[in-house]
Image 1 (tube, helix red, strand yellow):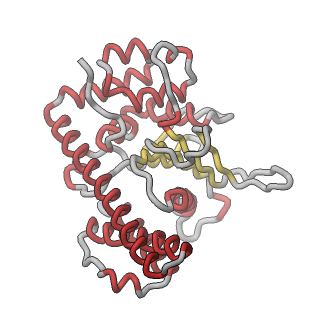
Image 2 (cartoon, rainbow, N blue to C red):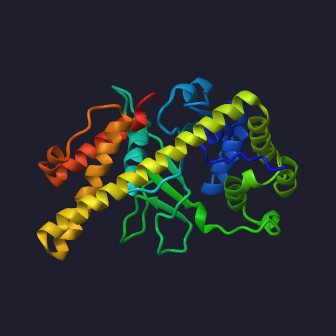
Length: 312
């Protein structure tokens, strides 16, 4: 019987990769994606799985922060929805991971490499077949890369079409992608046959425990519904924004006006959605229309940051 547990639901994702007793699972995932010259052998999970966190949280919790034995900092995030400015968000949080290392009075020499890994259920570069992108600070002319700096990875899960008949010979990263995308469709025993190894055994055992334990299964079901509602809310905001944009553009009566109206309407709709999620007073259409593009962009970034940090 299939487990029915989707690893990309925040409760399951955080329990699999963010539980200290499952450190071997996170280490294996990091090594599979990064393929570093110096393999990661130990990690400290800085925001470990906490059941109570999910019992009280209203936002989606899909990020794991960790530090390895060489001092490198990591943020691993499962992104289930695609929306405007997603790439800018990745850069912002990667920079935050780098900056937040430094305490008052500390020397810049203590800064270590900050690596952000973003697992995406939807494509972010739809015109490209490349599934895994790695971004670094590199000089275009010489090719020199700044070490101990910022590195951003995007892994588009939808671009991997993995056949179970070939999974045994697939790369470690492809095997992890297979688990993330398909674990809910298989029984625990089937997964063990397809994905042998201690690190996969730990992950499969965690999925199995969520499926069988009444308390965990109830929380999983609750979080899956919350995640689905969140995605629907985002989609609704996009539709509302597009409708507003078309209306504004038609009033202007020119092609450029439609384009500008679509962009502004989308941003305004997202701001109103974030205000609702944060349980704050929702700005009226007139209030937002009176703001400049820069003011709207800053307001959107501020609400996105506050939503992410709330209940952290």
